[in-house]
Amino acid sequence: MRKVSKTDFCIHLTEKARQDPGLPVPNPTASAWQSIPHELANHQSSALPANTSIAIIGSGMTGISTAYHILQKSPHLNVTVLEARSLTSGATGRNGGHCKEVPYVNYPELKSLVGKEGAMKIVRFRLAQLDALFETAAALPGVMEESQLRRVEGVDLYYDRAVFEEMKLKRESYLEDFPEERDRWLVWEGKDLEEKFDAANAVGCMTGPAGALWPYRFVGGVTTALFNKDHYPNFNLETNTPVESVSMSGLDEYPYEIKTSRGSIFAQQVVHCTNGHAGHLLPGLRGPLFPLRGQMTVQSRPSSFPNVGDKRSWLLHYAPGYEYITQSPSPSGEIYLGGGLLQALTEPEIEESNIDVGNIRDDQHNAAALRYIKKTMEQGFRNGKGSEILKKWTGVMGYTIDDLPIIGKVPSSISGRKLESERGAEWVGAGFCGHGMAYCWLTGRALAEMVVNGEENVGDWFPRKELACSEERLGRISLEGAIRSFLWTVA
Picture 1 (cartoon, helix red, strand yellow):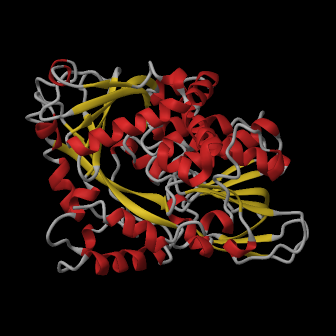
Picture 2 (picture 1 turned 90 degrees about the horizontal axis):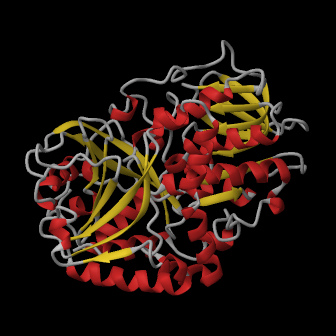
């Protein structure tokens, strides 16, 4: 599209973000994580079950976590996971391999939005994810090894002085409320940038605890465990079964009719774990939650670059935007590198196909973003020259107007469906804003507690009010305001 003013571009992006995201496209780009399909990748029953107690739409980390935690509480409950494509073929199977929470990045904004107590609760929730993943992996044979789940040092390199100075202030704001964390989140400057972190052209660095994993294999391993019919006799997985609509059935026991490409299934409760596509079945979320496509690559390890995938992961911060990197812990040490979204938006002219806001086309690449991330290793590291793109793919994330996920019971004003009795309910866990691995696993646990025990009975560990799917929360910030704020940070 031709270059327009920021105001006109803001209007254009707002219109795209408000559109019905529709269903996932049928033939996405090939993610390296899925290069060896899981044995259950295309599993479905010979015939779609007629009914189910709980229908979970989406088989990424949130959906499978929800099923897993429900069945830990009620092993004989009838739970059906419906997936539009193959198992874990959405954002979880297409991301960067991080499980990384940098708690200070938006901490001042969080405090302004939800208050000190709420902000601290959200941060603790995010920081608890990695331990929860380790706990689950340790309990399931083979999952730790297959998923390559590991603790690493998260290295955040900064290449813009103003961004670095701002981040140091945010770190101090965070540590004022979490003084016990001061020795875990460190600042580095000067000669350490080159000698310790191999950085080129960086002005500063911050480090802290992080994790990395092969998310597709983690979710696949959990799904395999759920197929133990001795323990979970009523678990069903229906892949390649896109949900076309959800409506009220008029039946007392199963108030929801879920129409799929293979017919209808009736459910007592429906859990929406469709992330960037959530607005398709929940029309009230169109705008407050919108899809955003990301570009990923696997690149060869430059001959002089250290093989430290079992020890480190990286974020490279610019103005605007950032790239994110994990490294395979295998002897080859391939580089998993994604980003380039904001840099692409700064180009004088940008093709419509390279605008990722509101874009669900993970069957296409962002050529502008690829131009940036192709050069990232060489520009960011002293020993980064010589990397080559081996594989490339895209994935669709879900973003929200307040940069927080939407988790909880869905009111009729959002779903457009009114329940006539108290027997059923709809729930949602979506909009993880590109940080799903720092949210999704325990989001599933929270949804499970609410589905089984009732919304009011979820543990106090979960920030229910702050992340609620409520008109009050979603009305705090307008879509136009959120996009305008975002665009005005882009040069």
